[in-house]
Image (cartoon, rainbow, N blue to C red; front, side):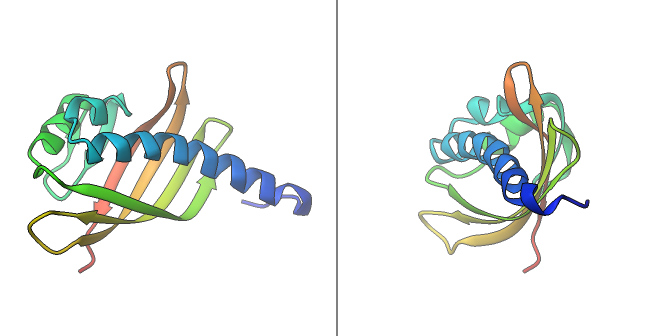
Length: 131
C-alpha cells in the first residue's frame, strides 16, 4: 500500500497503537491464566488457530487457553503491520511463550485487529511454529 511520504510515521503509529491495545489486553489475560478474559479480546466470530485445530468464536478461544499450563506467559514483538482501512489492521508478530517447567516456545503470529463499538478486537489469529 502506497503512503504519502509525510504520513508514513503517523499511519504506522496508528496501526501499532491499535494492535498494541488489543495485544496488551490479550497478553495480560494470557499471563493471568484467565481464559474467559482472553476470549473477550476476540470478536464473537473470530477464526482462531493456535497450535491445535482451528475454532470459530470465543468459546473455542476460551477452551484453548483453559487447556494451557498455569504459569504460561506471552511476550510479543510486532514485526510488520498493514492497514486495510481505518478499522482493520493486520499484524505479524514474533511471540515467545514461556513456561515454569519447560523451555520457551518461540512462534510467529498473524492477527487481524478490527475496531468495533466495544473497542479493538481480534477477528483472526493464526500461530505458525516454524521450529
